[in-house]
Length: 232
Image (cartoon, rainbow, N blue to C red; front, top):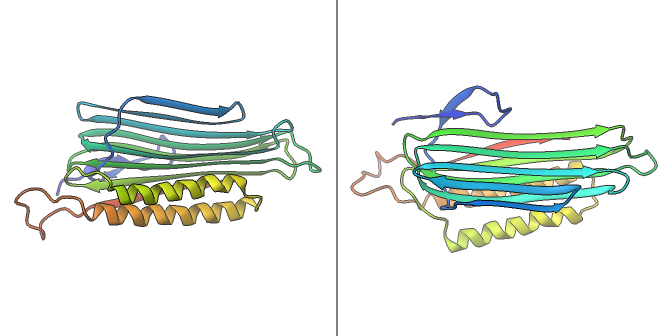
């Protein structure tokens, strides 16, 4: 089996590593969504001639004027057969200049799901998070980035049932924005949701076609890779 070159989803300058065959939702175009000056999410998705680019960034900023900020993103990118792909997922949370008497809370969470198909895809996958307090006594910050890469030998699309299950997880992720629990508890709940996503994707990938005339014993097995970065 041929292996692809895959840069590990740590810092952008991280070492190269083996890529997996991937299988992704067929999306194209550019979409940017901003919710507020203190919290925003931006998504870029483009595919053309076997080359795909997916970029998701979530940012949350808490300050005395906006003491509690939460922003999340849950994106699904499905592409067909590819030979080159770039996948970037970033979460950033900051808190500025709040007092110990009135501490701030800033949470940014990003779930990025990508599927592609092929056996010789060059993949650059980057998954990063950054959380910081600046002159902010007693503040809580949490940045979490989860990247799910589905690898299949032949193109497939997520079933309607799988998409409904993912939509349920998305609603649960949104609901964390109403939580007043410590950010450590929010992190645990987000990790539990990530585990649900992984389970859904593994079940979906198992149904992907093997290709005409392919011996089931010799076929490349679908793979779901999860990258997780948390700072706070």
